[in-house]
Figure: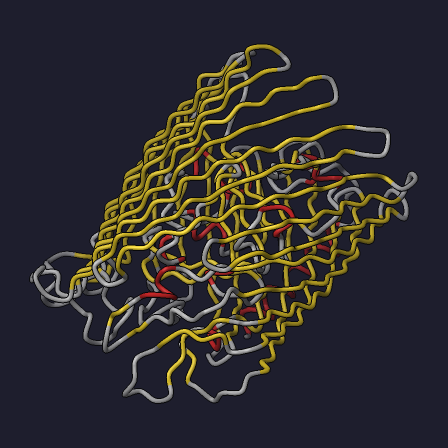
Length: 627
């Protein structure tokens, strides 16, 4: 806690000094980068400056300045987002928002849903390297009206690069804890390397992005080695100003030691191999004020868990899943506002050694209106209707309203609802004596109420808000005592109250010198209305307090960033993680070094997996853009 107090004191000192400077901002965190950014919802696109609910955006400039080796680590710095890694270096992680479970958060790539019908543990098996990302959008609260099923507590949409200019980015990195390997885990020190190359061919009518990434780490403790491969393509071609076509394809392959992931301490010699692929083909057609965009996409996944990696004939779990998605999105601009409406279908199936063979279909329909009620009020309202072949019909309405007080202040409020369909693991898993599914489960449903106040003037940005969420038929894995297997049940109501505040300020001291700071705090207060005293597997590990703060500074070709995270979970001790990154630019090359977990904190995020101790990395990045 002393480290946190020291950091806040340093931020206050910098802020007081910086008030003497009135120059415009020129740092990687400046707000001007976001003014014209379009929020890439599946339905109605909205400029970031006109958003009517709380949406956080992290840009490519911000990503490349962070002390982060993977997408998981990037998201760990976002207010309200909880990344719980079982394997570091981008191997495996669960993602949740505002105290929800990993099953209640939806992840998308360019609007294509990455839902894994087997388990949300595989949802972050994504094919997109960091250098291929343009920006990331984080939307909080139940969002069925915007994204359909499983966006119960929020959604994360990863938007990849596109543009009219060609570019090449190559990034090489090596790192180590400089600790000797454990007995029986080979010789030498723990460490590893990573490399990624992203190239984009851009012209007025098209952009074609290709990206490949490979990381190979021998671990950070016994049986934690990881080898990850990413391949990604995204293409956009405009026939004319009214007709265009888009294609996306990606492949991710992860092999990693799974010591402590699911069944510690007996799984010390376990291993997991996962593969996932995604394909999408869409087009966009404009006829006057009417726009229509059909899309077909598919996500396939394989999960091979080997409890004994040296004996594949015993305690091995094999899962093969597939989801075919069909969508038709459209919008119509009128004097009243912009109407959006469309339909979607999701056809899921699984073939598994301990879940069985199952399939189900999900069909949705939505209608939405975005309008302005005078010069100061913006509103978006809509309704999403859903039919699932296993669970029947549901309706989920939502409305967002923003009131612009003046050029600096904005007040927003939203009411949203959503649903989470149980996974095939929830329903049918037979993994005795550890876990057993429950075929009688019903979907979770939620109502989310939120209000916030935003101030934005010059180089200062501030937002604070409150939300209340009520989930009915809440699902958790529980058991009566340690001698019984865990099994999921609809336990009743899960109510969550939360408050958040975000402060950011950037300064340009001279033409060659700038600095800034950011402070983000999130507080969560859950309550449970259940009729059982069963032992929970997941819910008591959600975040209670989250404080993320940072300083960034640059002078000429040198820059550095410090990020500090203070986290307190419901039933765990608080811990502080400090990370540092230093950069030096020479023409098209960037030489950088990172130190993560600077103070060598001892902490866990998921399972029985101790996270890496102090880790040192050295990297070289080449960036070329056509002029």
